[in-house]
Image (cartoon, rainbow, N blue to C red; front, side, top):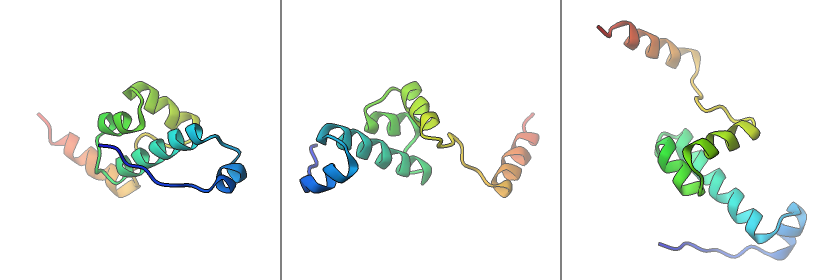
Length: 86
């Protein structure tokens, strides 16, 4: 499947990005958004962004984005579930 949309040149000029850089960043940001919403796995998000899993994690690290973004309550749930394991 191919998805496309138009961006005015002045937007790219304001961002100081080429069309290729803009496209790469948009793919990464869309993949990151869906990964954070738990709609895509890490592997599928990396695939959408055009990266390997390791490259996607590295890009997240470079951009200061946490790989796992849990609040305290969610972490408590995770540890409670782990404690139940045999």
